[in-house]
Length: 62
Image 1 (cartoon, helix red, strand yellow):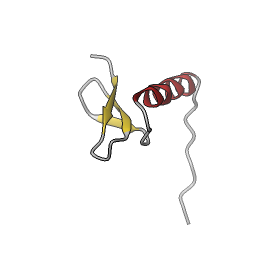
Image 2: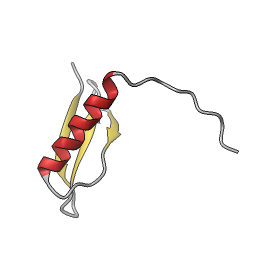
Image 3: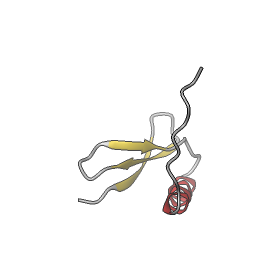
Image 4: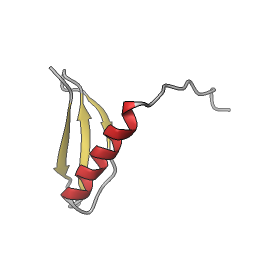
């Protein structure tokens, strides 16, 4: 089963998105948006950015 983005309204009235893996596990969440349309645009921005995103190992914090 493919992953999916879910857009929902939180208890504070903000719209958020979460990315769920095929097994139902939440693997990413978005910030709060003032409208459902803005949350959908946030999803689209993540989708565009992830297409060519690289994986970078960061050094251990001091």
